[in-house]
Image 1 (cartoon, rainbow, N blue to C red):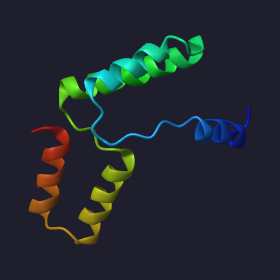
Image 2: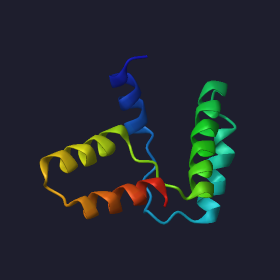
Image 3: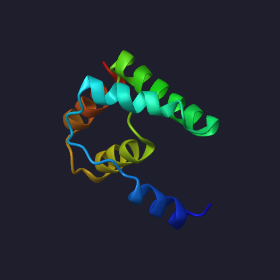
Amino acid sequence: MNFFLNFSYASRNAIWYNSAMTKEQVKAVLDRVLTWPRERQEELAEIALEIEAELGSRIYHATPDELQALDEAERSGVASEHEVEAAFRTFRGA
């Protein structure tokens, strides 16, 4: 199925909610997940496990782009050595 068909399907079947979903709403969505195709259930489970792992570690992992931006800032003199080191400590969890 191409992107536009997926987008169209998703748009017609979208459920709009505010950012503060209640526990009951979350449970209802998870109950409906059981009716999804197996592949989509596995995809959601993988995403949920990634989120759970991130929440458990509470360690931020900078993206390659963020690390590159820090390297470029250090080379360009835009940030002081102290500022760059402080940023790296944050990313390293030190």
